[in-house]
Length: 296
Length: 296
Image (cartoon, rainbow over all chains, first blue to last red; front, side, top):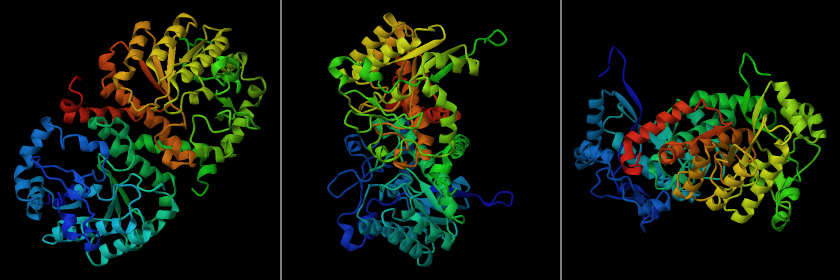
């Protein structure tokens, strides 16, 4: 599929995890509390819930809405994905889709899994167990074609010992070459807080990048969530603004200053705002960096 | 001062209200509860507090910080404004500053007053009284040069009967030609909620524009406020993102569709992000407007 001598690589392709992934892969100790995928007539039902039915990693009010609104985009997707859904979104389906798109290699991000750690202040050992479950499943998913399928391992934002241990396990035991996180805050600490430094150092040490990937909803506060049930307006802001704020922590909060070998991608959030944001950060730097970030 | 036959108009100039404005102008019934300006050695001390000392229209944590950080920008401002401060930021001072800048006319926005109604879910009659106080003071401030000084009247976001009554009073009794509001949400309703429609209708009826003007801090939740004491990063997002979200309500939430003669300005928040935001809104419209805003 290489074209003109170049291989085509998708830096942000999604897989569709099975709804019972966490029931099958989570450590027994935590399994009964784990995220459950919801299924319905919607072949792309992406909802996940707590075992008691409460929304998981999403605003509680979302539970009162239909799983997907029945518009033209919904109808289009039902036709587009019905055979993929019937075949269980398997590795074979993924590779076929890549063939159709002309992709040699893809970095793989989750769908249901984007919400796994998207609840604020989760119990750290529980969060770490859910991340391990996803990563173990992802290893199996990628195993038939490790040269084409590059999984992004999930790491916990709640405890840096857990995060660093999972980076080590992902690299050494599972052969992963990148990790991912949601960009919106699940703790009371912005990304430039020293709390996260051990993770950034580990990524430098293992020389692997992190991909920040946001989603359209979260169990935590999220940009635009005051638009509530108007998903159109929520989506306009959720991913881009959360990514802008994470990027600002990295550039203007000193993460990249303290970790010069760290590589970070901010995915699926547009980039036409980048010139404005970099200008705006420069403006702030000129006005008051001497007070707020004297180390930069 | 007109240059080449054109008059120069500043659409967003600020005045510096006296710290005891609300003690002097507020209805007696509410005066003891009104906003108090804080003064200190800082000639541009902009803090305002409740009579008991709690921060007003600002995060509580801000109280533990110095009124202004002592950086190079602070020092510059102290020198630049010291004589203006000594002369009480009077109308005369304002007009002199306009002469220096070559401005014929300026639309005037508040400074301390940006925080007056920036506390969520204020008691509506109290909020309306504070707005009337500001507007009465502003009338006096502009009176010496009404052709050059165009005050923007404050209106309450908490009760639309109050807001409409103040629009009518501002236009008919005080001769104002525009009103302003903060863009960030002080109620649980986004700007496109029908709750606000009476205000938009009144502005259409009186044929005056509204200027949305955000500030670097708020008593309500505000974009970027998780950056906390890092005012540099908070400022990067506070004004621009709150304005983006208000603009999205106007364009994508149907305010301008329902009020085609309404004119709104979104001020002091940059605009290099506008091409991205309009594209992003269009993307959302194409994908799911049929579900979420079928009226557009």
